[in-house]
Length: 253
Image 1 (cartoon, rainbow, N blue to C red):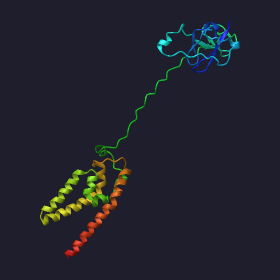
Image 2 (image 1 turned 60 degrees about the horizontal axis):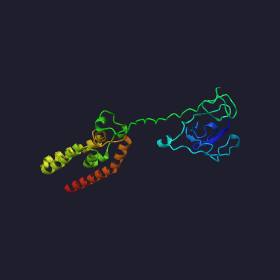
Image 3 (image 1 turned 120 degrees about the vertical axis):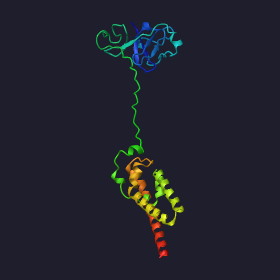
Image 4 (image 1 turned 135 degrees about the horizontal axis):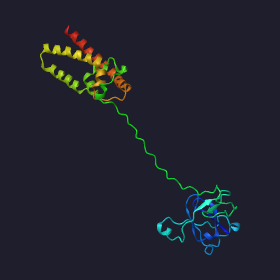
């Protein structure tokens, strides 16, 4: 029986089919594309394998629309590869038309259908967040933030507001206002109390800002870097205040 040489227009796989399939539709065994084989009367360029010309008359694949698919005169014919020479052989044919090998023997198998690949499920990741003031009360204070704070001592009202210690800020502002309306004797005691408060902020200001301040810190390194920027301003303010006190005492004496 003569055969017709065909080639898949999708993946360019070549193969042979029996001449009896002229005018029918076959399925490519590699990519599962539909191949329309014209009849010998309509397309005389299809010749037996011995006289076939390479790629001169490659048939076109049928459109994928439902209306075009219904116009096929016969159901598609499944193919398989010959286990000896690799030539496509129609399912149901016992012997290969190219080499004559028995297709009932092991080695000639129908190409497997493609397995759908499911998209991977994304793995949720946890986003780290800065500790809240309430949670910082229950953890230990890092050693690197302990020590004297010149910014808290020399610039107390500004430092308290920046660190989120608003309650202590308003207490200090109230003390300043009170010093303006009380008598000289009471103002003297209030001044001693303010000096003691400044000393307390200098010694314990770091612990207060870390544990009870509303401002949150990502790490101890960020905290120490911020306090380092306050140090020269605090020292300068204390030096200026000391000069004012010395000048005032000299004038009184």
